[in-house]
Image (cartoon, rainbow, N blue to C red; front, side, top):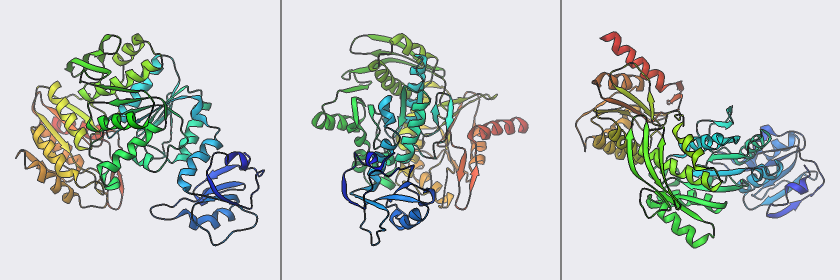
Length: 493
């Protein structure tokens, strides 16, 4: 692509040695990936500054450089493009380079502390029931139909990769894209250049404050998505921050805002919820009708996800009959309120809940569905928001009958220090707790406490397949660990 075409939508401060007709074969922000005729974007990072590697990129063939810092050395045959924010520019450049792929699809961005993954899968299933080919970008996997593609280890990849992935989805025939949009991704401009048709806000609760520092910063990052949308914003009106977002959008945006929740004041609301281990029956009241629905995944929080998905589907003309069929046949989402099939006299649930709100909603849903005692096994991540540890401990102590506090990716921290911070909260609510440092033994101990009719809740790991330690990352599988625990109990019996 000609350099002149790439730069059309950039706000440029200065160009040196301009060569508008030069062909750019590749864009990169890692100098090691530079090749002949590439454009290198120098981005200031948290550990290193990309401006330090401009020389490396040029030595490997880069013909043009986008930068925001002033440089001390300018080579006469290299084009230098100065911008205010090179990270912001990367997404715009990526979109142009890949020929604005998101403009050819209906793109729905989902943000919020909890529910993003389940909601993307729910939307994908609804639209595939309508015979649409769909792409998905998210925490577990990126998907083109049923084909799994690499998600680069991030919920929201870097902006250049986002555009590359969307181009791959466009070329693969996808008409719709459902995308988790993390607060980190928004704060770091990773979705710049994405043409969003709909934005969905699920909730905002304590998480990632190690990065954002305050709830206000966290909210401001999430809110950025909804000013990048062109059709409608869909907001959980029951959430306090959802209400604030509605006020903000009412003041600063002309786009339609559609609210949902359990409160009859919302545009869409659910009532008459009947919970069961196989799913939830509920009545959905829409602006035009009342619908009797069954969602094939248990939990009240899943009903919230279903409402958001329904609104987005209705807005795109999906008939309610198709939506009803899709919800009733919705397969479980890996590690999200997943009831494990095991030969045991008690039930086992695996869920990714790793924030205070998600843990509380998980336990409250389990209490509504199951009659027996709740035995909870969980821990908190190391090197992350430390303030939430005692909060999650209090929630565990208040909502479970027995709590086993164990490890969950301790990273560089001492696992027992993390466990101690969690237990400080548990103790405020109950004396029915135990501590087990190693997670696989914690799961076994929790299983050994279960009586017939109880439910063993394994929270925090969900779909993850690793345990991050100080000096190594170990393979870990919650499903295999739970099955092994049940097998060990049988042998012991």
